Image (cartoon, rainbow, N blue to C red; front, side):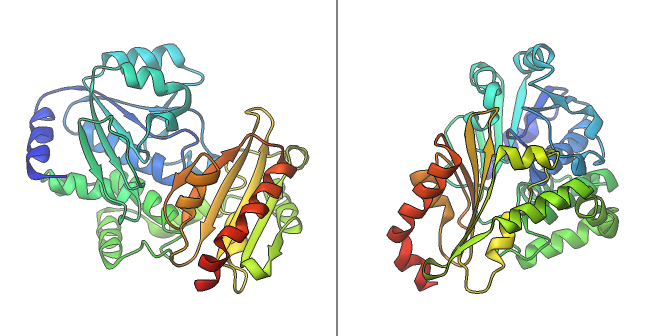
Length: 339
């Protein structure tokens, strides 16, 4: 983000505004952490601020400071769309294409508000007036930290803001083990702890809140795990029947795909999750090294994301989706075996 854009935004925020902050559909730790971190910051400027999520999110995120203020568009549609229509400024966080907000897309596209994008995914759409996009960043939460700092307000970061931002950086870096974790990321984490983020408590609240049923579902997923050694690929399937059997709740499959990638010599991992309600197969892809699952997701699965972490969907059956996945893998054999 250039200096002039920052000056313009600083001028915009110099007087009281009606502000809406939006994460992507099915928000994760980075989406909720970044929106709430920005929410607490903007409240300090005496603005009227509302976070509107397209839909609900996992229970392990429902303790984050300010979480109870979040509105859900799918169940509170009228009030949410009235707030969007009345907004002076709309911040869109952790996504870069309006279709990622599901049924909110039309209301956001038609809004006359000034739109400000903060995001770290590849190939942003041109819908925002001001764009802070950096694919080298570990997380949108790290970008929100920089955004507040660039506005000259790092001194306003307190324990609630620090806690929110810590959650997103921790979850999007896989607890600081992914390649996107840099020395600057660790410096920011140190600052957030100094500001009041309780790192041990945050980790426990996010990662140590498993239900018995969710662990049974994990066992089912690992039973379904398959590998294709010659293509250095592992994949997992979960049918709707299996999800129902173990009383699936939103967030229960978070991180399961990484078990496939943890197998020795695997470069690519995928999980295919049947969603009868939406009529799709949800797909998560992970990789090591320079193998781009973002390119694979964009080319074959109506999705995208990062080089080493991406998502998509299929409108085929679960069986046909997996067969299609296996059929395209030989095209990537050279790239997979070069890693």
